[in-house]
Image (cartoon, rainbow, N blue to C red; front, side, top):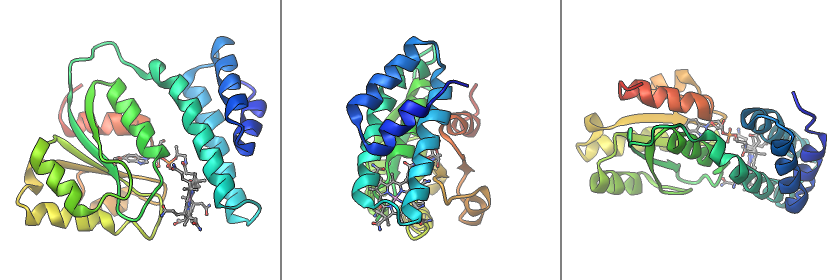
Length: 212
Ligand code: B1M
């Protein structure tokens, strides 16, 4: 594994310029994109979250670190592009109502796009009725929901209910994820699939659509 000390420090301080430069240095030095993502970027955001939970930093610092990570992620995008780019299916994705966390959702979108899925991203704070309206319009194969707060997870079953009410639940596979979400929760709310990270999300999506 590479040494991510410099990158980690730059993200923690929210120094976008230094973090982007160090990400490029690591790529140039031959570090793998997956290694940089998991052990550099995501590991540092987990530390940032721990520091926030302990009251050592506050929302503005956490936000700055998040923006810094997002900029670094852009440099990794080309490395997650798979060879064959014929569309594997349409994925409507968003972060659920009341929730503004989008780094994980964006990573899932990036990896799925790289694997050949067409992504329609509704962004953050997406209400059940917005998911339904767009789903009726574009008829996606998969509807993906992300939630990072235990308080916003209930928007997932609410969205599934809204799909049922609209009469389109059985036409769409529903996939969910996010730090507080579990496989058990997915089963409980009758989602079709759960993934713990962006790589697994691609595997799960292919499985749901029965493609390789
Ligand atoms: Co927030 N926040 N935050 N935050 N934040 C957490 C989630 C928290 C755990 C921090 C903590 O206390 N330790 C805590 C939640 C506690 C809980 O409910 N269990 C928390 C809190 C409390 C809050 C606020 C309430 C703080 C406040 O205002 N007092 C507030 C809420 C705002 C709101 O949403 N309404 C808030 C705000 C923010 C910022 C805006 C400052 C910022 C988000 C910026 C942004 O996203 N653009 C932020 C951040 C950055 C975090 C932490 C530090 C990092 C999240 C992250 O991006 N992780 C986070 C602590 C933590 O997670 N350790 C924290 C990296 C990312 C790659 O991982 O998102 O888990 P993750 O995504 C993974 C998987 O989960 C999965 O794949 C991804 C890639 O591997 N995945 C899916 C995600 N979605 C998926 C969907 C799928 C499949 C897989 O299928 C569709």
